[in-house]
Image (tube, rainbow, N blue to C red; front, side):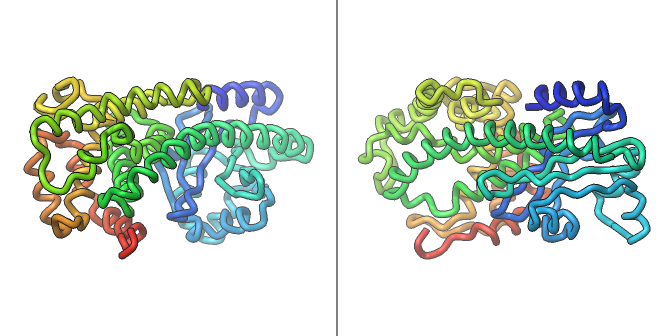
Amino acid sequence: MSDKLQFMHEVMTGHMPHITRVAVALYDPETDYLRTFVYSSKEESPLTHYQARLADCQSLGEIAASGLPRVVNDLSVFNQFGEEHQHTRAIFDAGLRSSYTLPMVWGGHFFGFVFFNGDEADVFTERVLTELDVIGHMITLLIYNERTNVRVLLATIKSALDLTHSKDPETGGHLERMSRYSRLIAHSIAPRHGLDDQYVENILLFSPLHDLGKLVIPDRILLKEGPLNEEEQEVMRTHAEEGRKLVDKLLKNYGLDGVEQVGMLKNIALHHHEAWNGSGYPDRLVGSAIPLEARIVAVADVFDALTSRRPYKEAWSNRAAFDKLNELAGVQLDAECVQALVDNEDQVLEIQRLFKENAYG
């Protein structure tokens, strides 16, 4: 997606040289967060790994509600009115002086924005806007198609998981919470690892599918009350490799091999039970040899398992769970990923508030 956007930007700059940045932000209606996703810019983008509540962004909220684009041919106007949002200051401080914002809407569904920025004021003339409308809708279609391909794959898998987990007590909000813990960890460590916004958002999409391979585990083992014997444990451990095989089959059957970063999904399914000290499975990988996305998901999964009530245990407090994660750091879990979660307790509490369990799961 980044390459496609850069190509379109290069074509534009041939006759619109002052359009120096094109960026896309995606909207998550479940949390009301707007998040940076992909960009093309002559210079490094002033906004990456950024998120803000749409409710806190009055002008963007008005654009989303109306479905109509907005032109600001002089961004200094926001300074005059005391605009305090980080994204507005960052854009202006980076030398960008004008903007055209197009809401991405498909089938009546709003899912984000395309931003065009100029390095001079008054660059968005009527002629330029006519062309940018076409380009903006092309970008909308590209983003929508890419996300739709991913969501077709995810919806298929999740439907199968729902059938299995309808009998499984360890469900409810678990997948919603652990996927957002995973995103929180990825977002926190992204600058140190050079992870782009697409990686962070795909962690959110793919992490709930870590236990996909459990679809092939017999109910007598999957739903057994009490501890598994050694033979049953061996069968249960096969779910990691079976998950990766199922991903390959689904990609082939749905013709989705071109989905970006699908290798992340395969790594999560196959390696989320590897341990930092090499005692995990299926490949007994050690330390940084374990794919980063699998290390992220492992921490998120363990934390939510500890802090969730189950028929066989009460929920641990966040503090007790953090203490346990710190105990496991550098042994079973990646210490950096553990620290990323522990250091963001306020956001952990928000996720727990938004996706708390109820009596019906």
